[in-house]
Image (cartoon, rainbow, N blue to C red):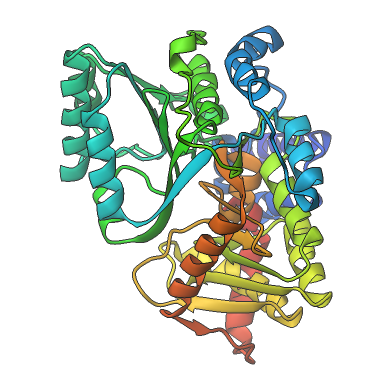
Length: 462
């Protein structure tokens, strides 16, 4: 009797969840993935859904009025620019980002490409040491290892000197870090906030939507954006990060202050956080800082990458640690390759997530069938997230080529329209290719193909 009641209750719950999935109008692939999980993993599937599957897209976190105020300073900086020239071939893309995302194009920028952790952290510590009035950090992972302790001590020292230090860390990305680590920084004067703290029962509606951005702004005049978190492992991993000086820092500052309003409720738009940029930087290196999130109207970064793939004429080179592309991105890659564009994809030979690697195999096979060249990186784990096209534009940031980055995470990328920078990023790809072997399409054993195909069904959830 009791068993029958429990089964009936479970069936009602599953039916309710499936109806909820249908009414959310998610992509068919994601809806089917959740449906299969609920059917083939009774009870466990329901638990996973309540922790990871609930949709918060319709929640309104920031009012239009507040967004206008947070955008005001960067907009003033944009209008103060003279002789802004956007390459004609990229005008549509620039306009798309400006319309969807309020991602304004800024000229007069100097960009340093950083490809290993030692350079990144030593340069960052120098910029922290010389900070005069503000340090803003937004990172997915801030580990409490020896390197994290070093950065934390540097931030605390600056806070004691009177520098405003604001830190956002992701509560899931940094879940292993004890609260005492954050409290020590708070007592030292650092203003610390967790992004969407994971606490039951709110746990189940927040765990799937994480702030994956990696942005640092010092004195409103120098900024970092890319793939590196604050953790010792990045001293050994291969990754790509950018250090930017110039007007584009306004865009990164705006992105941080919007996130700060999100976690703290403080609306900060004082002019001193957007200082006048040195007139010594005078060039036409145009940059847009584009963000995306599950609460945005559009998947902005995904749309941008699709457009780049479809408008390119010569080549598109991509590095990503996780290749679980959405249908629009995979289709755009295949379309570009089939039309004669040299499309190359670089992924790690061995991933840090076994299930992701298995799910990725079937997507790689489809890429190969369309003529896309796939390279397996055999050095240390390659966490780099870059794209470069036609010696005209490139992008670097926190966005992976996967469902989670395009649909669930809060992400941020710099899109750079400049021939010199595009060629520099192309060289990064070519240098990495020295540590790669080209993946060749082979007849895999039946059970390997079956395993990969089964995990591919879960790609929207990984």
